[in-house]
Image 1: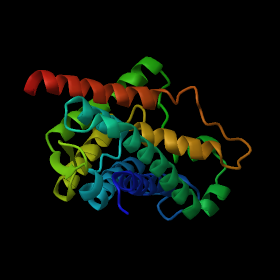
Image 2: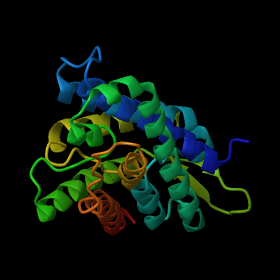
Image 3: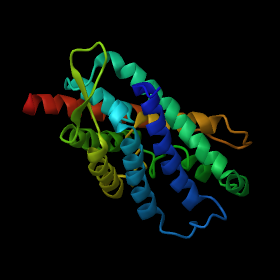
Amino acid sequence: MMTPFIAEFIGTAILLLLGAGVAANVTLKKTLAKDQTPWLLITTAWGFAVFAGAYVTGQFSGAHLNPAVTLGLALIGKFTWSLVPTYALGQLLGAMFGSWLSYILYIDHYRATSDEDAIRGTFCTGPAIRNYKNNLFSEFLGTFILVFGIFFIVTPNIEIIGMETQSFGIGSLEALPVGILVWVIGMSLGGTTGYAINPARDLGPRLVYSMLPRKNKNSDWSYAWVPILGPLAGGFVAGLLYNFLLV
């Protein structure tokens, strides 16, 4: 039953449940964490959310949990190109499901909160200062650091039936350093855009937010292309540099 598609769905759902959950916990009214230091708590929780999702599913899919990671690994020849769409779809649906679970968990607090920008921020990212060129570069650079770092952590831990080559990914032992990498990216580089660094992590929850029965919701689709294109470009360039330096 545990196919790579299901594993990517589950792993990304865990990632978003815990990641969106901490955003809701420090943002929404009347939660017990409302008065805590938000950025330290958020960056720490997202790092460990990556660890949790990757630890659970690494042995089954390599725990990419991020289309930019999948793209980068395929580009450097460490993942099968034919599986890229399957992984990306599993990641997107998992992100939607995980963010929806977080919404259900905090539904009373969502009802008690009227700040719609704050509500949207518990689902998807947005810029501190809206400057599309700089926002795009921020997402590009953060994802570049993530994917380039992952290239030196992943191992050939799964074999695809019917394929002659092994596909690389994150196993249980590799999950912790990747989580730490996400943690430090958030603390160091995340203050400009909220560091989506993952197209599925932003698009999936944004879709869920757009379907909520709220009167004044604003999904901010004019910005939504930034956390999609920026991370994909970052993963792509990380793959090009890795191939140039080491292949």
